[in-house]
Image (tube, rainbow, N blue to C red; front, top):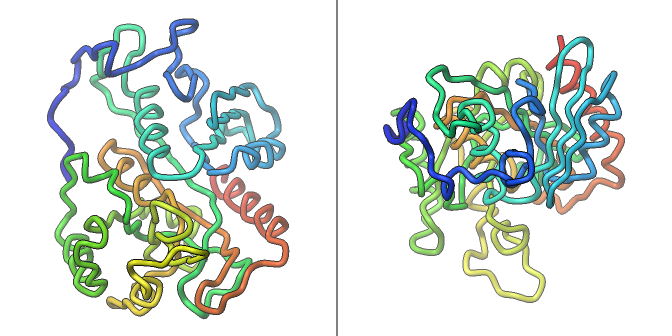
Length: 300
């Protein structure tokens, strides 16, 4: 995979490109300074889930909220961790990943790109709907790949490696969606982080949708252009890989993480099974256990 060669190390970024808050020099949307961020970052969609995570910390030294972006940074078992709410959708992930990277790889005072690159560990904890009938509600699922039906990564220079490109083409051919949607893209997770936090969980290809209803095959009052989208996805199989679930952030997280040189992995709680039309009666206890599992594995 190759990222753009411009701007280069040492380049100064214009005020219109790297936007900082005038009151404290923090990064624009997240309103964070570099010292507010830990090397291990847990991202969640729901702002309320940040407190559920930080309540488990031994101590919290950063609490910052701006728009839907909520950040708590603290300590657990002698290790510093950041919990950050991204809000819903890949458009927000574009903001979060670029601004997290800026905090560690751009000198905000001089606006110059640093010569030494720093890599963050970013784990997304989310909820998801399963697309395979044998994945029960309240089970855990780790995303080996993000399959993007959004178009965020199409705006960047992304060139998948041969194995990923072949798998991506197999998915495109199988789905046969024509011009009904932008071409899906495929990005692998960080295998190192997958083995650390999700090795014993269900695994597969996570489809990232740009919406919750029609883009995930749900219909309330509007007819769908692709009526059998979920059936097409759930019937795909390549080796031991299947499309296992739908959610709304992973593809952009994986894509931008790869291009920027960060380690990214998504683990989700299955709260619905779309094939069996089941929904969890109360997923909150299982979500608490998933948070505990991820925190324990990150701080080992």
